[in-house]
Image (cartoon, rainbow, N blue to C red; front, side, top):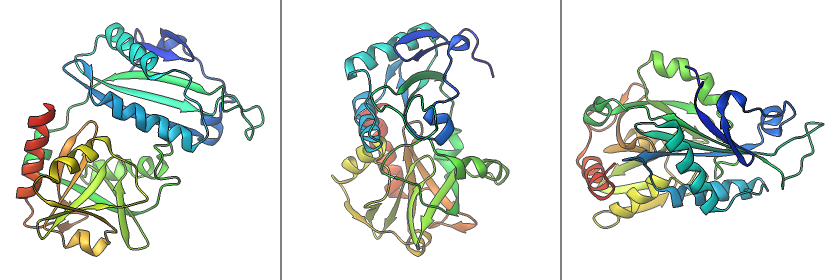
Length: 278
């Protein structure tokens, strides 16, 4: 899968991807000191861009990094890349690292490495929405979970297992509590209530929108969710920027509810699609 002929934005300039170069002394490479955000286009336009920019800036602030462009400037770059790369629909990835660190320890947070790239949008199989998905339980807690950092070691280490077992993602848990999927937000439905982890997770852009929609019809409770509660839930679902709302019907080999997408999840998915078009 090559990138020849595609354009990227790197440190103030739009240039061909095969001409883009990042220092071997970059703190993101040497130490993983970096944040990112990912969004998709909808009918060619960046979807929920304002929310993603807010989260991106929040993640950067948690690492003490300065985003070198204002929102208007970033928006202009994204539109230029989408036009030049001519995707049917795309994902847009913004990456911000600590920049050059000659000794691997010190860097200037005001001169970060700032990269924006686009990819052709991958399609989620319709069966995931119709039949539901499986998640694999893994004991793990992300460092600085409220920041969207680039540290996906556990997910990448287990990616072969995810594919081999026909799962969609990992579900992280620690000290008996579930937190989030590796690449999505996780929620359960119990007794007609929608339960959302209250802390120690990344703020989900789509997830927040879905919970806002849910509050008009259901009781939404932000609370600790134990592994046992998740396994005993009537329904479960994940949300993400490139998937929307996906029912979860199995955790490992344990069947959630009756093993089919439940009525609350189907209702929220339908309302989300109707409101956003995603």
